[in-house]
Length: 219
DNA sequence: ATGTGATCATGC
DNA sequence: GCATGATCACAT
Image 1 (cartoon, helix red, strand yellow):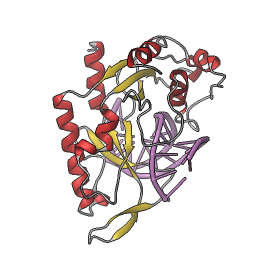
Image 2 (cartoon, chains in turn orange, yellow, purple):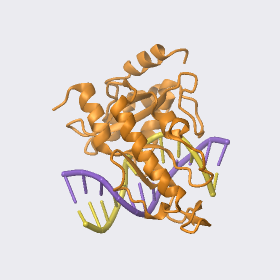
Image 3 (spheres, chains in turn yellow, cyan, purple):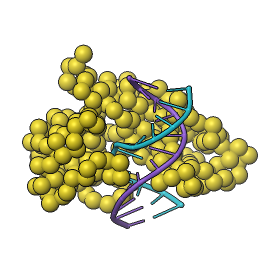
């Protein structure tokens, strides 16, 4: 992908296409449902737009500084799910700051692609929505930064296991793992190393809904 | 084990 | 009805 305009145009051209058609173009088969294929739609759009495959803690288009995010919407245009941003560092966090954080890096420029998330419609028949580019404005950045800082302070204080998804205005911390038995290192209450469930940062739905509403003049 | 892509399913 | 906590598939 040579430049941002080319990427955006390519994404725009996908609007209205069914998942069946998009999958056909890329030789992919459509699963009956997403129960055991939770990331399938995201992968489909990555393939369609030529995002760098693989699982690296980088943006999808590093050369463009762009992160690709699909977001499932209901019939009213409201996000059906929170949006995963990145995994949360739980150790070696002395000196990490907002400016250098993975959250800020990932959200600096996002190519959002709304998708039809209505479960009553067969997956193959659901369609791609109108893509748009987003960069957090000053107030959004302030909210994200504040939440990020509060979460990271608790983690640094050995309080990671006291953080629930209720905390954070727009950015929440939640488990991010294959199952409840997966463990990773973290800092405990007395500064010791403990084993805990890996966590991830997620954007709350009200936050993404506001972005969607503003973009498409909904309500 | 840790990262990517996320949605599922249950409790409130 | 909806968010939280749990979970699924796959790459490295």
